[in-house]
Image (tube, rainbow, N blue to C red):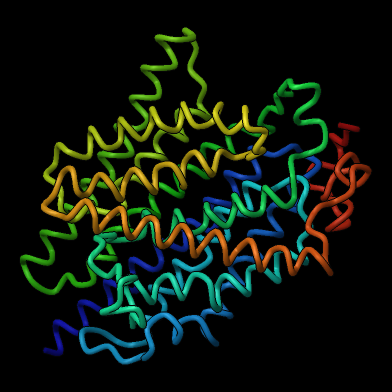
Amino acid sequence: MDVSYILNTFFALFAMTLIIFMVPGFAMLEAGLVRTKNVSAVLMANTMIYSVASMAFLLVGYTVAFGSWDNSSMSKWAAFLFQMAFVGKTVNIMSGGVSERTRIFPLTIFTIAMAALIYPLVVNITWGADFLKGTFLDISSMHDLAGSTVIHSTGAWALLAAILIIGPRKGRYKNGKIKVIPASNIPLVTLGAFLLWIGWFGFNGGSVGSISSKEAADTVALTILNTNTAGLAGAITAMIVLYLRYRKLDITMILNGALGGLVAITAGADLFDIYSPILIGAVAAVLVMLAVPFFDRLQIDDPVGALSVHLVNGIWGTIAVAFFADVSLWAQIKGILIVAIFAFVSSYIVLRIINAFAPFRASDDEQLEGLDYVECGMESYPEFKQSL
């Protein structure tokens, strides 16, 4: 009993540490994809999200989600830390998608609401205490190992609500045409994507919940293998499609293809054989490549492609569980729908309320100046200051 308890505790702490690597992962990815005049603001937002979301989850959110801190299989402190590592990711998904035109203070207020209430309530009805159990809205039978829907789609539905309220960046769409705003630092984008990829091994592997028996250890190893395979398939598929279509290789799209595969495999990595993730990741990459121009045609401005990666593939990954494992398709679809309605509507209402007294959107002049100077009073690249 003591050995099992100690092993599971250590495993949860190790997985939590890997997940925290996703904090600099999101920060570097977003810093590389935005213009140089907005990099400090992006880094500040990511630092704020980790700090504020974690504290809100400690004080309120964890109890809302799980009802109790008791855990018989490992230290309750380790169980909390593992779950705490997840919470900021829902807002990270959102913050990147509204970058370059969003103020930090109102985003901080929304971070508190998401970490203390919105995300914990989604966890409650899926992984946690489940106050809806036994009702028509019970979705506890949905299989979502590490959160294709619970985390990735929840954050992305909040992002969609935010974009509808805040609008696109100044000059992004003009006279029906799309102005391309290129990434400012491709090495940072690449570093960020691979930090996220590494973090995903703790994200999905740790969600198995135990490693103290042969069966549990095999499941953890299979889960991590399948996670990596889906990422590989996403990257390779994006490379092939890009080369066949354009005879050029866009590293940002290839990395988003990999991330799409990682999002998609998150729901069922513990259930699949070692070959299914290849198809799941490949489909995910194609969906990312179709979704990016689709959202642009709708003038939904998402600088980092978060909706294409996290929303589209959060949905695909959750449905894919029913195609490749013995899981009810209706249970998966019902879970997707209920989380979608709750996450989007609650986020939209909270965002509207915050926006009424603390507007999210920076003015056109402030966007032109850059949020580094406006929000932080310092610039990441002062020697390269441009009037963009």
